[in-house]
Length: 611
Image (cartoon, rainbow, N blue to C red; front, side):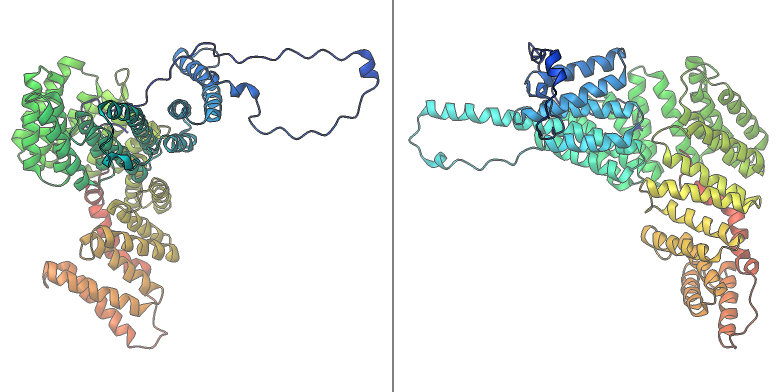
């Protein structure tokens, strides 16, 4: 998965390279003589023979064939000649079959061949095909259980020579177990990366966790390599919005690096940058600022000017969150000067700083400066420098679209989001970001009255989040609620009721029953129940909403007054005959629809639409 801090976050591979053996080619049997004319004239009825089993190639029994084919696969991957990846995949799969026939003693080489095959699948964009291959590789090198202590250890009759022989005999299994453990660690981490490329963050985090457990058991909990894996897993937790787990792992990595590295090391600076990101996401801006300042001092001491500029941007973001606008402007301008001189005016990092300045000036009411910086950033994104990452450009376009939305230029915001979506539509591992773009487009379509397009955008985003395993986040619950509102405008009442009910279940679990977003779903669900004739259910929900709002906001709040009026109307209707006049859906949902239009941008930005 992509790293969040400026360091080499790829975990070390543990599987040893396969040994090279002589005479790798299988022996070929001499060709059989061609049949004579007499035998062709009098054909014999062939005797029935058993059908050949799959992989019945006798050449696979050659013990030297597997390592030879594995070397051929690796050479084909590096050279790219002779068929390229397809030929390398053929070599790797045949090597795996040959090594599997060897049985005991070839487990590490078999795991290596499976790793190579999985890497080729990923290189071809077939990440789903790599999953079962990696699962098989991990199963092959699962560390065996520890053997119980020998019964003869209690006897003291064996001499020193016998004890030395016993230790030498135990050394080989111990070394073998360590090699198996490191190979299993490598397999679990590669499997986690592959799940991440498919957007399955829960499965990815679980695989990284198993790899970390195996690595700590093999190397110890205070090894520097364990610290690198802790930071890698912490970044995965950040991607999955699991900030508490990320903070624990990042603190452990920081402690290990401080113990084994020199003071103010680059590894410690990378840990502090990640910790600042985590604390910023949790709302601890002062703590984030402290870690960023320490990381900046380390980078200055090591002469990393570009890294210092990148940290200055993060410091400016923290000042902006603290409403310290003058200090934020100073940090942004300082970073902009360094990046322009180091990378040129047309680099995406320069455009990203312009976007941050545009956002700051928009918040402070300086709209002319805000729009000017947006236009500067768009000029860079229109013709970016060679090698610019598509996700970086798409993220900048999303932020500019949010600014244009706040300025009221909804059509231009939609065009920018469509450009961002086109940049990422073929990128693997970007499902969550694409879902965020589609959800933001759904909000804009709703605001301009294009409810069918709004529902379609929400539906596509919901499907991607379901497939990637992010159906338990608060963002997913809010997205379901917005899709339900679009269905109401299209008079799809049953579908809207199902969406509101699912949104309620998600937000109750993630945010609690008293959270404002949960209460908003309650109100929408009560309205839809009233429209469906389920008055008693609607009354029960509104009573709960009114009670919570009175406790949180007081009895004089306008929202409380609205809920009181709605509840009074329902109670009056419940006491009349059932052939009452039906209420219009527009009247039922007018409050929520207007509120959604006014607060759409603010609500979506709170749930991480920025990549």
